[in-house]
Length: 384
Image (cartoon, rainbow, N blue to C red; front, side, top):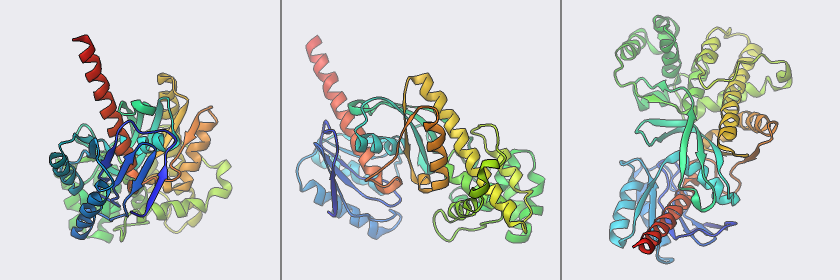
């Protein structure tokens, strides 16, 4: 074990959390202490899976646990490991929704007692409805009630033509936006030269017929669509390459941002992305302004939704979670907008905002669930 830190409030149960699929890291929660494993990497790699197995055993060697926590996705190695450990130890195994865990990690780290509005922004996580989520506005209770939550709003879902392939090829997301606006006939003309005419036609056919085109509300996929529309990325060489390029371009326009044009707040970014297709490829300043407008449109739409949700639910606190908050242009704009409306803003401090910090949120939610179950059992015993 390489890292531990103390939480401001004691957890109501002892939990081993098995973490996420990407940047996997396990954690053990007991009282005020959180012990992390090393970061194992992505669980698509067999060596990373073996490393997680070893880390879980090392964390369990520190003492007993009351529950094992895992992501909702049934096919992750971390989920299978949690189920096996729970059966072996005779303790409950508790699945925690991915974006709920992102927000709960900050609740635990900051010692937040009251309810919050959580903005969970990342590439993908399995939603409680079985769909791909990632641009979420959540209501989450605080303190020892953090197992209670509700999805109150989300980004407009975008089609992923080709499924997981679309997450690696931003042009597919940009094409999907065109198609959703009734402009599918433009796909071959705009992308045929860079991906091949037959590939572009095939993708349009997929979208026309809805073949292997699952929907996702992931903020990361909207960054990909915007980068694809500007011609910044066709195929990504590494995770978040397109989003990083888009942020770097946007920072070039920040000095004149006070006079930048803006869109009415919305969670549907299709019109914003569609406008980016019309920006001249040889006009560097215009491209930078378009990249910044996208960041501002995303931030302003989310801020508007969060303010509305906070008022509706009587909250005065907003929590940021998910890997998209590594983007400073987005996070700073969002924080400013929310604070100007009198809301407190909390972001991860010790735990990473991305999936490497997810186990903390999983563990905290599971501990709260154990405590709630115990309380319900005591109440039932008293009634009988």
